[in-house]
Image (cartoon, rainbow, N blue to C red; front, side, top):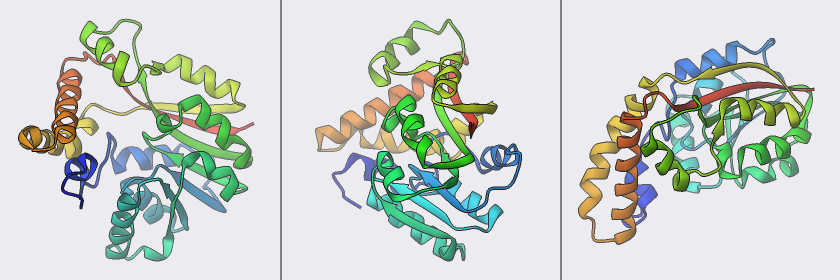
Length: 245
């Protein structure tokens, strides 16, 4: 771990790098009309909480893609400890390059990561890599209501200005050529348990770190947690269960 890298200091060793749970991951998997076959890719896998949940359920190889090597190393360690090293193949690469590496993907999974290359861009980029009738299960941060507290609007105006309403994302998915099979909004508790409840004390402890970049990252994280607490359910992570047309 780099003792001056804000990402390592805040997220190092964490199982969850964003809202979610194994129960919600498997719930989405069960909503597919058939079990996946062939190539399975987890795009933006992070440390692989959902990767391991999928591998354990499917007992099929999963191609785990992330651009941050330390996260992949953590995933490889976790897979080995769980006796699933033979099911996880890690790839340190940009998610946008997935079509150049993988073809005929039957299931492309991505939890809370598509925003890194833009949600509509991700859907368009990954589409040609999917086999006919292949699936994409992607979660994306979205506004859930037309009205939201002013504090939340202000925060995401700079924190994630491309954030769209859930219905806008549905339209984008359809425009990219997908059939929408289902949607699911993560429950509030999946933001807190194993994620914000770990991040908050870590971030508070880093407010006095000697590096300004670390202090700033910690302060931004604490502000994000505060905003969530007064968001009145105006936004959330939404899963889109998609099938290539």
